[in-house]
Length: 101
Image (spheres, rainbow, N blue to C red):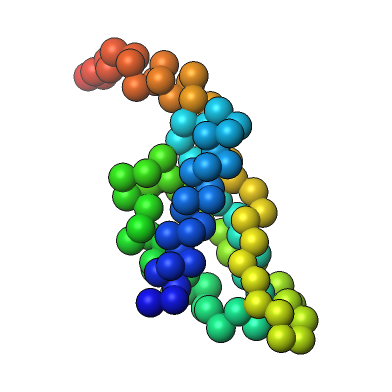
């Protein structure tokens, strides 16, 4: 369950940073995960996918880079996020859909 809490904190941090930058939808989150963190990339990805629904990160892909965290250090660090600007997100959501056929 430690991984679930990490995933929840990661999503919260990413959403906060995105809002500070005027991002309305997060497409990609990149994190560095320390080798001494006792968390696997697979487990973090699993929990990330379970906790992101209902947030602006619900469509986000998670990229995890493993880093040597040194002796006794454990870390997970939000490196970057990419998304669509809040203005563009609102425009796209309000744009009438056209059918092709």
